Structure formats: C-alpha cells, structure tokens
Amino acid sequence: DTAVSQTPKYLVTQMGNDKSIKCEQNLGHDTMYWYKQDSKKFLKIMFSYNNKELIINETVPNRFSPKSPDKAHLNLHINSLELGDSAVYFCASGGQGKGSAQYFGPGTRLLVL
Amino acid sequence: AQKVTQAQTEISVVEKEDVTLDCVYETRDTTYYLFWYKQPPSGELVFLIRRNSFDEQNEISGRYSWNFQKSTSSFNFTITASQVVDSAVYFCALSEAGGNYGQNFVFGPGTRLSVLP
Picture 1 (cartoon, helix red, strand yellow):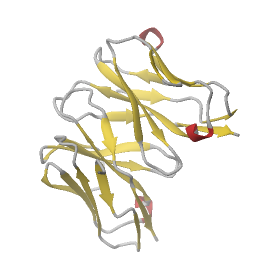
Picture 2: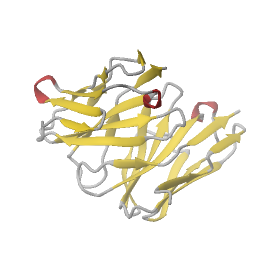
Picture 3: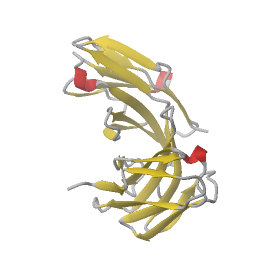
C-alpha cells in the first residue's frame, strides 16, 4: 500500500491552462505539505495544512491554491499556468509532533509549454 | 533564519570506497531537528534519519552512519563500502520546533553522489 500517493505522475500542459494535482496519504497523519523542486533540485515548501487548516503559506503566487477536503487529502490547484511553474511538485505528510519526519509522495512532474 | 549548507555539489567515488556527505546548518533555536533524505534517480524522496538537537549520539545503520556535532553545527553522513545503488541526491534538512503544528523544513541544496562500478 502506498503511504503518500499523487496523481498524475506527469502533467504536460499549455501556458494559461488551469490544472490540479491530487494527493492522498494513508499514514493517519494530521499534517500535509506541498513542496516545489526546481530544475536545480532545490526543494522549497509551499504550503502546510494541519487537519484541513492552512498553517504554512510561503510566498507563493495566488494562482496556487491548496484545498484539503479532509485530513487525508491535500490537492493543489494551479490557475493560469506559466512557463516558470514547470517543476516537480511533491506532496508530503507528517505527524503533528514537533520534529516529526515528513514522508513524501512520488512527485508530479509538471511541464508547461 | 534557518539555513542548511551542503558544500559538496557532486561527489564521485568508486564502489566500495567510503564517502562522507557534509551538512552545516544555521539556526537561532536551541531546539531543532535535523534530517537526511535520499532521492534516487527514480525521483522519490526517501526519509533516512532524524536527529534532535539534544541528542548528539552518533548513529549507525548498516553501512550508513551519521555524525552530529553541535559545536560545529554539522550533521555529516557517511556511507561505508559504497555501492552503485547508493547513487542518488542526498538532502540534509533542518526543522525548528517553534510552531505547534507543521514542520517548516528547510532543505539544503543537495549533494549528488555517483558511485561508479
């Protein structure tokens, strides 16, 4: 059973389109995250949700909107896609306790043409 | 502000050599947590180890060992008798304990390790 899953694995789309990436975790964690990994492999946190509530919101364009229907799911919607949005997006989940490790999904490779 | 430096961008070794990946961190907190993750060519991020700031004991897990030294703000990772399957990008990460929920991880830039047969 996959602990943290993301769909789709690959996403190729045109500039200006709107797209969504879905994430689900079956680890029973209360906290979920979205990260962006750029072409140089830099990993940067975008959002964090705890039990459906937004906790961390880094400086991310408001074209990116996370949505958490329940604590096992955290989806990422991206409006008006731009070339610079091309990256690998990782979903992660972690326990609520301080210092909890985060467990990552397989990543979604987004390519904007 | 928290920061993680991995000065080695890329390392190449021949199989069976030992290799150490360096990680230096900056934080103003007295309570913090350090992590190592592995990203093999397949792309997933695999959690390897977590260490809190109060536990300076070194840890060994099979061919992997970690050396945490608060005096030099370092958390280095050594692979003994490296194997081709160890080829990956390795990330060091720091999390401060300030928030009640969620862990704001700051990742280092990663070190790409290539183990040649």
